[in-house]
Image (tube, rainbow, N blue to C red; front, side, top):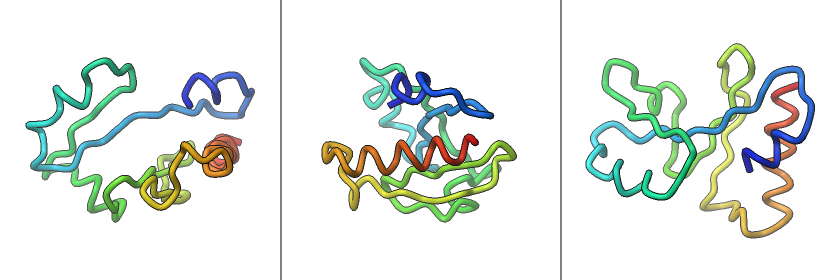
Length: 97
């Protein structure tokens, strides 16, 4: 999806990255294998998952000031379904404008 949204001109860039839940760092190497998306590890001092009230498999969309715009759960919205992909893409692009 990063390559897809990069083709659209927006006021602010769309940057996709993953944030692993605190306490689950042991799987970082496996999740990063063969992928190019940046992957960050949440830590207790930051507690991004808590601050954003993350549910497993949420995409947390932030605005240009890093304020939460919306959560979009990939378990409920499988991106293999074209309508879900289009919906998330639109959410991301709207947040960037």
